[in-house]
Amino acid sequence: MIEPHAPAPPGTTPSWGGRARLPVRPDTGRFLVLAGVFVCAACGLVYELELVALASYLIGDSVTQASVVLSVMVFAMGIGSLAAKRLRPRAAAGFGAIEAVLALVGGCSALALYAVFAWTGDWGGPWAHAPRALLVTFSLVIGLLIGAEVPLLMELIQRIRRQDAGGAVADLFAADYVGALVGGLAFPFLLLPLLGQLTSALITGGVNAVVGAALVLGVFRADLSPRARRVLLAVNLAVLGVLAVAAVLVDDFERAARHAVYGQDVRVAVRTGTQEVVITGGTGGRPLDLFLDGRLRVSGRDEGRYHQALVHPAMNGGHARVLILGGGDGLAAREVLRHPGVRRVDIVESDPEVVRLAREDPPLSRLNGYVYGDPRVRVRDFDAFHMLRSVPPGSYDVIVSDLPDPGVTDSAKLYSQEFYGLARRALTPHGRLAVHTGPVSPDPRVFRTVEATLRAAGLRTTPYSLAPREAVEGPARAPDDWGFVLAGRDGPPPLPAGMRAAEASRVAGLPASTLVHPRY
Image (tube, rainbow, N blue to C red):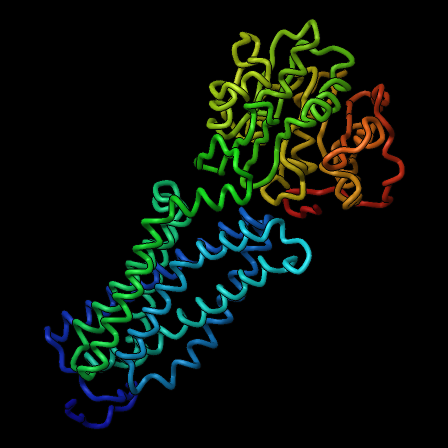
């Protein structure tokens, strides 16, 4: 039984259960509590970053996903802190239960989010809002549990050694913030590259469960009845068992989920330092498809039409020196090299793994015409923005921008006025820039914003689009709706032969997109 103590002096926080009976010295017990705060804070931030990273990968638009996760989680932490006031009389048992639930929910959150994405297709129909609903649910639950930790940990610290409220809060938050720093750095630099998103979340949950249970059952075991200790031990063992089984089966799960997303003919699936690269088909008569972070970047069914429309119009003129931004798959370079007079082709690709696959994967290298064996082709392992800042003025006759759609947040800066200003500087006086703008029909504003941004950078533009496949080849799997802008320094380039003007989608008065005010 806990011995009662005298009323707390002014300026201190009252303790509900009296001074704790500890199996260690008070200073050691206090250090262990603060160490537990440190580890739990690190785990909490890993859960948070895991949700942001996976939601950005699955849903897209990293700014929106980060805003949703952070705002919902911070709000929930406040609610959880208020709700935990009722648990303060049983702080040790309450903290132990919360950590067990947090370990299970946080550890399995990435697995559950990926599973729902994989087995419900493209979120159409009744599942249209499923990804964001699931993301908000996990953010809310994890935030509630993290917020509930603080008042309970404050109570446990005060039960070891009473001190003024300000000092206790300072100690608690110092351990919490340092733990958050470690977790925030460990996720991108250690956990993600070494373990991947799913395994890192599961292992973090296991660490969370072990530390929470060890703190309560080791330091504050006297606060719990024998039955409560047995229940808490059993619950934590069950949580660890679930996480361990999931960690053992995670590779099989990931393969099954990948097949559900991409089909059964996945040949290559690698996680690079920046993205996931998946290649399907390319053998047995099946068209090759290349996916980057779940988004289709190359379709063997129609990539020829796309790359011809992107490259050939810009090659109408001097084209001795060509710069390709993106295009590490080598397919744009294949079209460039079809033109006589090309002396040098520089490909700027920030992910060396894509270039390696384009060199070494037989179906992909066959599709790109083995361009990386041509001595005129050079690869520059740079960010496209950094590359354009570093080249001398007038370095290229042609620049081909074969980059992800501007609607992808990470690509927004590569469709900015500042970026196109650098591209204009890199062109010769009669040079030309070809830009892929994404599809035209779903949102003509995006297409027209690219054109307005090019004009704001001092370039003359000719927008055009490729006729849908139905209009030229009959029924197809899906209509092509690619939009392009051909830009030049010395006058509007002529409309490419075989292309159509994109006047139907014109939207007047659109402002340019800039680095500090992206408009896509």
